[in-house]
Image 1 (cartoon, rainbow, N blue to C red):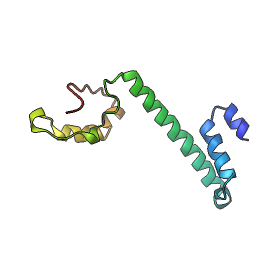
Image 2: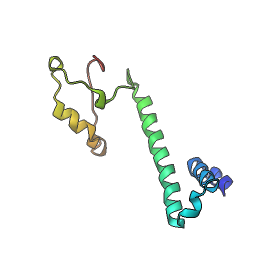
Image 3: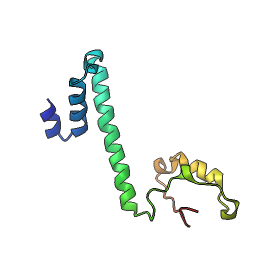
Length: 106
């Protein structure tokens, strides 16, 4: 079964199933719970991979910069309400672009 998952290009599901089979957790989970867990892990892995790919393609000068690490500084005249909106990532589902200008760090 694990080999078939890998052939179907579901490597995270295969790894998770292997982990579950080698632990006692598989016996404690129903079939639907097991399937949900495997699907969730594969889905999360693929989404994270997509985000990493987009970050790489964006060619940020500092891809480690995070909005959560932004230190409000009155001299920079940053509108923190806009920053809070950006943190929700709503612009992504609205298919909007965001351009940030200036130095990423102090």
